[in-house]
Amino acid sequence: MRAAREGGSLLPPKHILNSPTRLMKSEGYGSGYEYDHDTPEAFSGTRLFSGGPWPPDFYDPPDRGFEREIRRRLDYWAKLRKERGAK
Image (cartoon, rainbow, N blue to C red; front, side, top):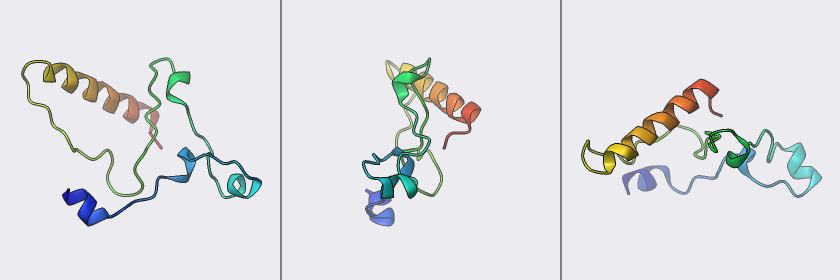
């Protein structure tokens, strides 16, 4: 709630938006978009938040139960983003 209050309604970055017109394409909409399921890991790491530090840490699972697996996946995705220099 604090992030929403402080950041307001942020627009998604242009590179993840559809570009149905020539004008939108010339403005950079959809430029360099990578579809998750076209990658070997089914994870492109594409940045979905505009500006500021990313990814925001909205959830920090504790080391117990199934949340251990969630932590493992979050760490793996962070590693992939870092290796790819996520946009």
